[in-house]
Length: 450
Image (cartoon, rainbow, N blue to C red; front, side, top):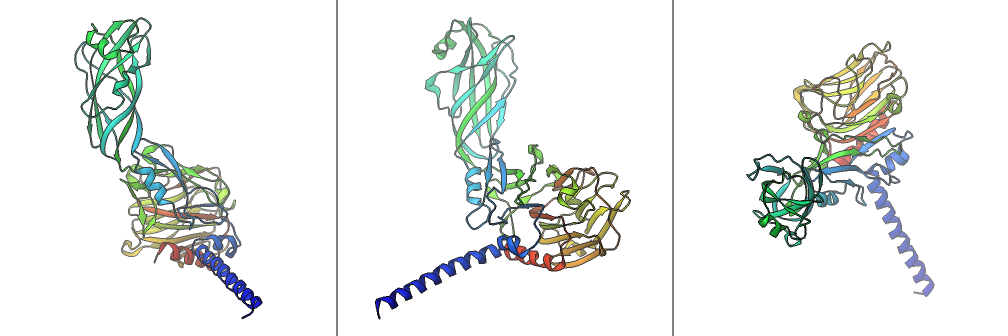
């Protein structure tokens, strides 16, 4: 075979390999929304929240999370294949060293023993040592950072240290003992003492020779702790992948939905998911007018991947107590899926319902599409790509409500979702059944939904 023929054969094989690699990449994104939202749909979402990467050109993160052991936060992004980077999440929730701060007031008789203060360390399997300590002492008229001897940089369970604060005249001192348990550090302060002059360079000797009751107590501690931790993590922000910057967030720690529990990532159908807990009234919110997500006449579509929950729960939306501004869904309410929008006079809600026989969808990850249209059927409920209920009552227009929520609505105190939500995408168009089917096929292929 001549050299030219060999060269041509080599070029052909190389082109085939490149083409195969490109097709393989396209095949992946076809199952992970890139091709779907990049070219297969003519409409762009107004907001898109997911734990998978939805668009090839999206360069941001999926979520920002807070770990409970020390309240540190971190952005979590995606793997090169577009999945949530659970390895990064697991590394974040299993640190080997954390820093926690605690404020406490110690009460006791002069020269006597003060009450024990328990500093919780959630997620700690074991605590081996305190490797750094700082804090403040305060008294009747002055407070300041305390010092302690450099030989006591590493503190183990049961060990006592002497801390001291020079107020310009005397050094006020106290003895503190730390006792470790799995999820707690017990801190007890023994009667304080003082000695004239600046004794902060020789606190142990000064304390042993000190006299009297200083009236100064340790009231703030910051501890760097080494040990083994399997902390839980909670979503502080779910980033909008649509490019419109409509992130939803929650600043109150007790109302943040959970993404990892005791070192294990929350999952539904084997994929990472966000768990909303009704007892904690967990929700993520944004200040958005309804016309930001839908049209001014409430026309639009919500595409969801979630587990329906029991009782009177709402998965997302807008609502108020007078029902004059609604675009939301009960998923479920007493075994019935209810899709609510405002009526034409803006005085009540228009409701289309689907009877979820025997609560078959509760706790099962499924795809849902809720479509509000300007012509009949004005409302359409899709489950797993199939239309299951339609409405024939015209819808109204939006008004001044701007509190958009995922995980519940604050219309009533009990309307909070109580299960996993993996994806929520919104459009300002009533998607056709063909478009709903295309999206469902993509979501089904990725999440393994029925």
